[in-house]
Length: 260
Ligand code: COA
Image (cartoon, rainbow, N blue to C red; front, side, top):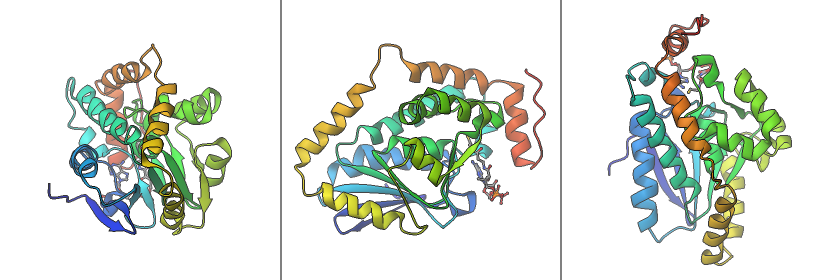
């Protein structure tokens, strides 16, 4: 596949994958999700020339500022459900990937960006990183696993506050809450991720894959919270409040929600 929104480079036995839509703060549009899906399901599993993956965003301002809100406005009927399921499945591919995947978070990690960072096995934040799930400001819920993984990382109490308020937190607070593994000076996220991956590269790859699979097994519960989130995403992408919230973002004004 020809990648247009992903830039993939082999550096020192590591695949550095850069989401390359800087003008839109690297927002995840449908094309970018397709490319991530192709990379994690086809290219990366076939290649033998690397031992780990780093995901980052182009530029110095943003890792990923969310799903692409401009595409949201075109969603009709059950398309919200389809979009959410597709994104969730791509993020499961990342979470279940047998080689280590590290997010180098170089700025905003909001909405789908925070969800993408949480699907990675480890997160390195630059000092300017900002995390949050601001979907509630648009009148919807996170649809790429945010309601589930945020609780897994930082616990129910703080996760509930962030999900209900849409507030952002900085790198230091994210570190204290356990959302990120390390905070480094801005611009050094990839360097730190590489040094962790080179340490992991000295271990046995079968053990590494088995540890990743075992950790994931811990979170497989009977009640399917991911499915519940998809139902909520479908429901909220069909409301007038959602059109108002996403429209207000694009028109750069405050949203006026009416509960419809
Ligand atoms: N989807 C689509 N476009 C986005 C985007 C998104 N999630 N986030 C940012 N952009 C675009 C903006 O529309 C703007 O485009 P324009 O220049 O054509 O108007 C450009 O990226 C720069 O963003 P801007 O808002 O001007 O930058 P800022 O520094 O003032 O604010 C943010 C940065 C991240 C705080 C702000 O862009 C934001 O709130 N983004 C949305 C975050 C969000 O709600 N994500 C969850 C989506 S589910």
